[in-house]
Image (cartoon, rainbow, N blue to C red; front, side):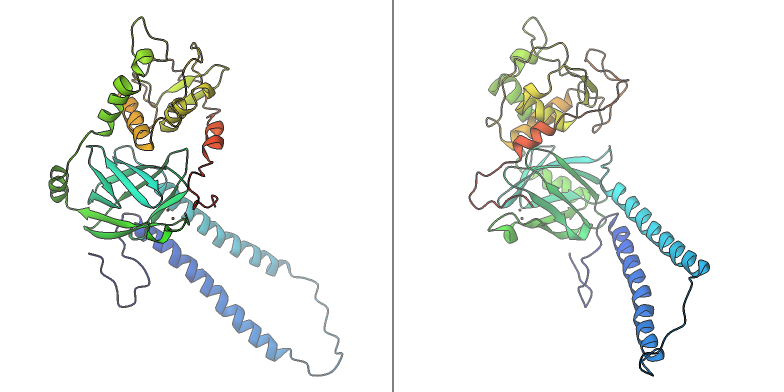
Length: 360
Ligand code: CUA
């Protein structure tokens, strides 16, 4: 459980990178103190030493000092570079999700957090995870901007309308940790929180099996794809095929009409469903209708999970050289353009709720 020192200045350290964030923070405090004390001391010392003794005294002229200027340039440069390098290392570690992580989908909504596990279990304002395993969250929001924040893990990330953001962590000790929304998102922002339950693997397995799993994201996506939305009528193989083939697609490069190339990641799939005309695959007609407004964020997550599952070689979102040759991939073309800007622009206008504030 969340135990505190007698003065609760800091939340518990409960993730693999919590100590790194704290170390960086203490380093910054140490530098600030190390500069502040001599500066304040110097103010008093010079105030006394050079106080006014006679009216209109003329001081000696000073013509600069190469040594002094070099010293006061190099020392701050070295110190600021250590801050930069330390910060960059922590940042890259935190915001580069590992490939072998367990994946969970998160959808923010005024004013709750919805989570869905790969095995189908759903939770609201609670998230159960096993200890000592890498967890990757794929996150988005139904309405306005929120921010998923777990202080004990020293990590947070915005969830942004119209796109996916990612967060990963590895919890180091079992317990119950606060979850907050860290971005003002309307009237009940302060109530938009919950708990992360970190459990031993065995307890977690028990928890999973004790909860109704319903459809997994992949099953939900498959159901939508083949039955409810009828995507399969164009995208399945055979004589009816008018849409791009999706088997083996995920994680590979896709050539678009107009010569651009994109990586088929979560964002690309999402954009192809909501704004199909913006990224037409080379060799196909722009005949696909938009599904904007017809699918919820959870259904989109399901569709993305299903299309992802059609390429068993893809781990996460890196391209996999062993993928089937049937796709329109161009492995050599540079990923010069992601082409998602149009999607972001259009999607960033939530406004369905009168309490919604403007983003940031
Ligand atoms: Cu959601 Cu603040």
